[in-house]
Image (tube, rainbow, N blue to C red):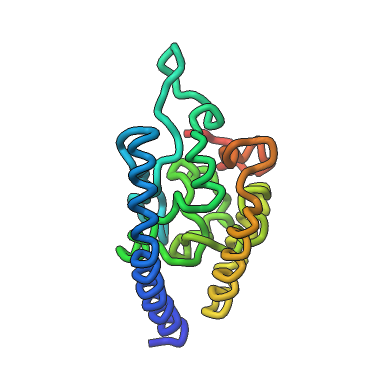
Length: 217
């Protein structure tokens, strides 16, 4: 076993212990949040969506629901800012909506630290360099999150993700976790400027001038 493989094994052990501790400590909070969502927004309590994991392998990500499913009069989905509830805003601001992802860590789909898992449709929009963010397991938090979170643009975010892949170490993970705790307390970078949530990644709109990025299929 190489030193890198041993480090990954240690990272996995830390993930399991950290996630189990997190679940035990947050269990009462998760029960309260689940009850509030059921009361305020109804069922389902959880939001489930397919996301790309390590090497783009799909998995089901779980979060607490923060938006209603209410459509407009034409049965079309309303914009995020109209569907995001008051309770949802508080959950997002405190990152409490992401607590169920601890179970994804236990399953091995995610790590405590790594590039955030984004949408499946983005896989066709990445450049080869951006695709390298999937060389590590996605995480609850990551280098991009502690360096701007949703307040930075997509290009910078992907550069930070790839930087993490190239410079990963256990000590870097510890640093990111500590910085994440500080960020949650200060509630920094929750939303993209002028938007309720992070804008959709559109390579053409965001300046990724590649033939691959110009295709929407």
